[in-house]
Image 1 (spheres, rainbow, N blue to C red):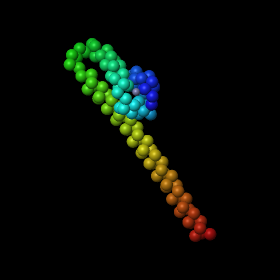
Image 2 (cartoon, rainbow, N blue to C red):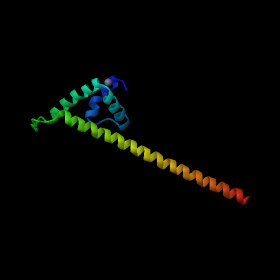
Image 3 (cartoon, rainbow, N blue to C red):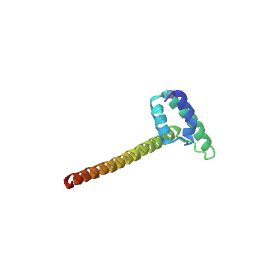
Image 4 (spheres, protein in one colour):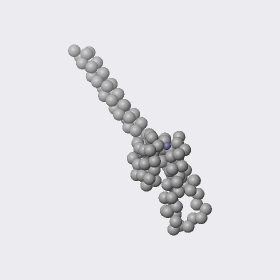
Length: 113
Ligand SMILES: [Zn+2]
């Protein structure tokens, strides 16, 4: 992912609007790109600041909060990946089952005929 695209996705990310595949690429970019990470931090600080303005939490830890949100996003991506693997495994097993059934059927035809 290019910086330009990552920057464009910062706001949708904060608003939790990114679909998981995009989220995954976004997180990967954020992890390796200090500029975009800083960009995210700025937007995040502003967004969170606005959100907590009324709550008046003076010692609010913005950095820790961002880490927490990033971690939650990573977990979401990992979960989606896990679901995909399981889906793939189940599909593969199902195909394998069909294949074995087909082989058995062939054998029955072969020995029968
Ligand atoms: Zn970047």
